[in-house]
Length: 404
Image 1 (cartoon, rainbow, N blue to C red):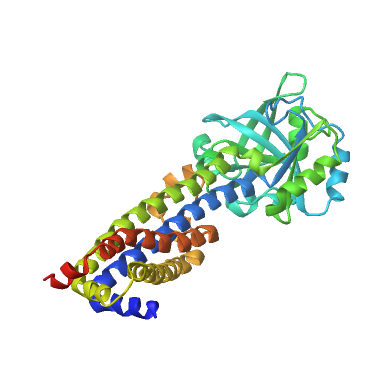
Image 2: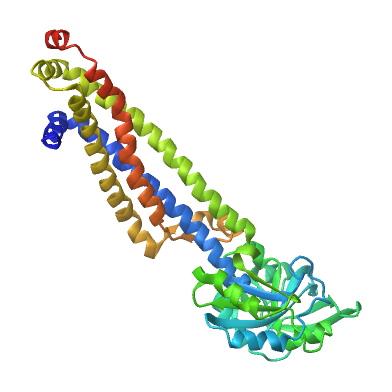
């Protein structure tokens, strides 16, 4: 009975009710669209870092991640590889030799991170092979090198050019080797492109004079959501000479940024909710003042103040629920096409690459935020109706009936 009366009261002034509903729908849809864009951008930043170099999990000699010295190669790497081959949940792994060095051409030079890999293994772990814009990926032939487009421009070289790579060897003496540029890549991160080159694993070992030693195992998990379990499983089979680090430890700033974004979305929700509260208070007050005589008659014939209070609050609750449902539907319908095609921000491509994001952002609306909004907005509608409902029940029937 109360719901029927509240429903009829809402549509007695259709224009006012539609204005309130529209504000709720726009507010909810805006929350979901902004949440989708933020999540999409952060997910792409995280994915790009993981797929280009970080991987889901890395294994080093203990202390290597904090101090990447050439002497910190992995002890008994065969033992680690055997462990990886016999651990469930691993999709692929790649052995790497990593060092800091200098790359030089006839025109310029630049400091770089040198990564030596077995081409076929690295192809299963990172997406560098998919990022080639000229030439071809490594083929495990001697003296091959692939560099980024930005690096090629800085060194003023092209496919087939010869460049020299220099690095400190195991005994501290300078090592150098001549390479031929066989491929040029371009990732979504300009920072990564400016400082990374790839050569074959045997070439890297020869350059650094480290024999058959390696410095890193990069691991891709079958299910990244259970990376902590895989981390523990691998670590339990190794002693304290090794460190096993998942991407959440390797990318602390990125993980913190994701958490901060979630918290900032909560603040945004509260700001939009606060704006809606004032809108609902204003609308419901107008509704109450327009119906003073009606309320006076209802109270005069015996309607209890508690029932009148609930009727006004129910009207706001209905508006809140309808607006929330319509807003969620509008938000998802708006973002759905862009989940597959992406928002094109080509005009900001260079700026986005500095953050490790491509020119297109694919939104990803979080289920948690959707549930949060679905609960929060109706509650806000009820809170916004409390004061108008209080004003209604405080009316004196005699004066209310005489109100013009």
